[in-house]
Length: 338
Image 1 (tube, rainbow, N blue to C red):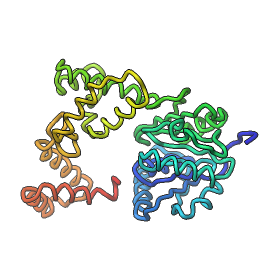
Image 2: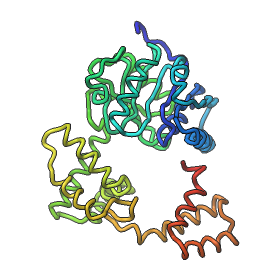
Image 3: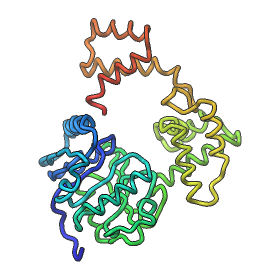
Image 4: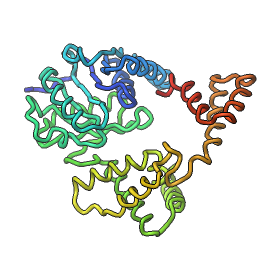
């Protein structure tokens, strides 16, 4: 890879889930072709519908949108032959990511940049001990929630080609991202590393009995003017997921206190997982009816429910079976939200 020229060809994204489809939207915003690869055909079709919705909402977009193609993993080699960039967006399983990076290194042309979107593992962790044909082209490209949150963190490793890092940073900016260069190996990149410290101190404060979750969230929101406090945020993520992340930090870095993890384990053992099971730092079961009313108003506003017979049916159905009502609303939203 003697010189680095303006990229020619497509962007290939492995995984058409929540992040993959959002990345497809972003990388197609400049008119270039994006190829989404996923084993599940339904996942691919849902992703295409989702991208169309994002495009419809992008009222300030200028220029033409790029074509989005779909492909199966069985055709990966032919899919990669014209790619200048391939991004893996598979589930957060280290062994799965390692196997995929090895496969991409074998199949992708010499000039194709290989990036991982992993939030849990930096590229230096993923490729540790690997013998790759060309490890200079491998990097992390971790985004958050595009297009609403445009931040993307680009992180290489000790053998990365700095010209390729610069190229990806430049192209990210041209495609609507706000790129940030992580200049050293960093578990948690930039933002998640700072956020981990906030979560950890929050849990330590709770474990010491200094304040309640409600008090911590209230002062956090009052001072920083954020919509949610750290306890509310952890409930949304899931306390079991928060514990997994804390365990990863503790395994990789010395000096991490044990009290925050012990506090989380006690909560989890007591059946508190957060929003997903209705109980975390807060009790969400009591808030379900409020959430349903909000959903119903939105449904009426978006013409997903007629305001006469369907409205009456909705209320009767909720009184009879709240869980099925939640699932019904979810199915009515699926073509838009997932």
